[in-house]
Each structure stands twice: as structure tokens, then as C-alpha cells.
Amino acid sequence: MSEQNNNDEKAVLNNETAQANAALNAQTVDHEASDQSSDQPSDQGNDEDFPPIPKEELDRIRADIIAAIKTVYDPEIPVDIYELGLIYTVEINNDRSVHVDMTLTSPGCPVAGEMPEWVVNAVVKVDGVKKAKVALTFDPPWDMSMMSEEARFALNLF
Image (cartoon, rainbow, N blue to C red; front, side, top):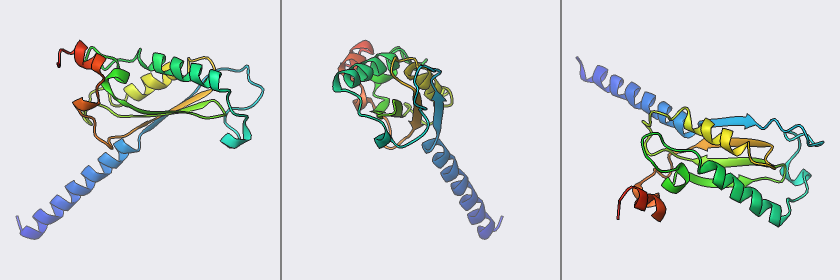
């Protein structure tokens, strides 16, 4: 095989790898809660079009979201994904939509396509949440230093 053909094949493989990584980094999972009780549509307008959520209610919603996320486990590790450090951010907007940034223990995780949906399903069950979106990212990549003390204890990593 000529050197040019070998370089062309490497370039194609590098491009395919870059595209696959970009697709994984950009993966989002959307799900709308089925709460029909609100008289304001949850998918219209900007966040500033909605009144701020009172602090006490916001604190309760955040605590309930974290509790809901803690019901989601990586099937290969006996620790919930929150304590594993897989949840990077939880943003609650005035329109009661929630945006979660999360990662996986590795890009090759066997449940990569399913776990974000598990998180969405847990979050939209929280009272006060109208819609949830999960963005899967690998920046920064997960490592064991992101685990909580509780997770380290559960996995005997002391």
C-alpha cells in the first residue's frame, strides 16, 4: 500500500473518530413532563418571561431533583450516579425546565444511550418540574477523584 493511501486511511479514521466523539459530546435527551396543571405553556417564551421561583421552593425542587437522580445507578457499580460524580450541573429555570449536564465513567459505557434517559425520567417526576433535558459530555472526563466520600466508602476505596 502506498504512503499516500495509508495517510488517507488514517485521515478518514481520525475524522470518523472525531465525528463520533463530537456526537457523544453533543448528545442530549429531551423529555417533557406530563403535568397539565399549569396554565402557562412550559415550552414557550424565555426564562425571563416567567416569574422567579421562590427561594424556598427552588431549594425544595433542587433537593428533590438530587434525591431523584440518586435513584439512578450505573448497572456495573453499586453506587448512585450522583455520588459517583457523574452529574456536573443541575440548572432549574424559571419556566420550571431543568437542564442537567452529566458524564459517564467512560465513553464506551454500555448504557451510554440509556442512562441520560433514566436521568430525564427521574427528574421529570419531581413535583414542580415541567420539562427536563440532559446533556451528555466528556469534558472534563470523569475520574475517580470526582466520587463523593460516600461512594469511596461504598466501594472500599479508602
